[in-house]
Image 1 (spheres, helix red, strand yellow):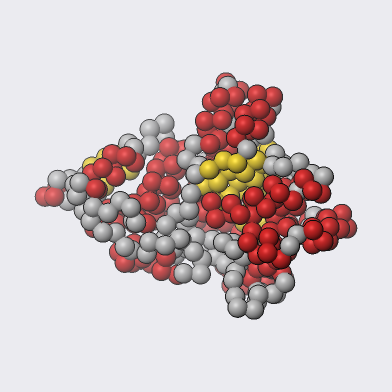
Image 2 (cartoon, rainbow, N blue to C red):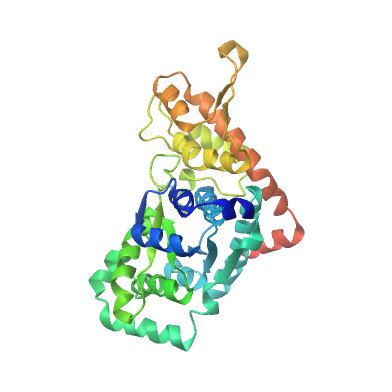
Length: 349
C-alpha cells in the first residue's frame, strides 16, 4: 500500500479520496493541500447501539484514504454517545466503546486494511480537559438554540421534550475537528448539517474551517435508511447465518426496481467496493442453478443494475447471492467474537 502511495500524483490521490463520495465541501482546499502534502482526517462513531453492516461503507472509504496517503483517526465518541443515548449510563457506554474498537478493527482486518496506519482516539481522552470544556462554553454563548437543533436534526435522537444534551452534540462534533488536529472530517451525508454548522462556528472561535467529505447513506432492507433502531432494516455484524438469510429474504426487492432497492444498493455501496479492495478486478457473482442459466459474473455494478432493470436477474437470485456474500464477509468476525473474553464483553455491553 505504501509503494502505491509514493507513486501517486496529487491528482490521483484526489480521485481516490473522493471516489464514491456523495459530496465534498471544500474540494478546492483539498486540491491545494494535496499539492503540498498528504492530509489528515477523522471519522467518528458514537458508541451507542450495535454497529450494523452498513459500517462497511465507511471502512472501504477509510481504506481508500489510507491508500492515498492520508493519516486517519477513528474517533470512538463515548461522550457523544452518553449525550445522545438518553438512557445508557456512562459506565455502559465505556464498555460499548471497547466493543466498538474490537469490532471496527476486526472489520478493517477483514478487508485487508493495515491497522498500523490508523490512530484510534476515545473522545473522553480529550473532551473533558479544561481547554475543551472552555471552548464548549464559548460555543454555548454564541450558538442559538435554533442553530443547534437544526444542526443535529438528522443525527441526534429527537423527542417531544428533548434534554439539553442534544443541543451540545453538534458543537462538540465541531470542536473535535480542532482538537484532533485534522484537515478534514469524513461522515455520512446525514451529517451535512453538523458539518456546515462547524464551518460557520469554528472560525468564530479563531479556528480554521475544515474540509468535509460525505458518503451516501445505504438504504435499509425495507427501503428507508439503515438504522440501528430499526431491527428489520439492518444486519448486525454478529447476526447468525440464518438470521442474515432470513432478513435478506424479507427485504424489499421488487423485480426491475433499481430506485428503492436496499439489496441492490448494498451490492453497489458495500460488496463491490470491498471486492475491489481484495482483488484488482472487482467481482460479484449471481448464483443460479444451471437450469435457470447458471452463474453470472459481474465486474462492475452498472452491468448488474442494467440486467436487474431488464429483469435478467431475478430478485430471489440476487437475495440469495447477497446473503452468501454477507455471510462470507461476517464469518471471521463471528469467529473472533466467539472467544471467551469477547463473549464476556458482549454480555456486559
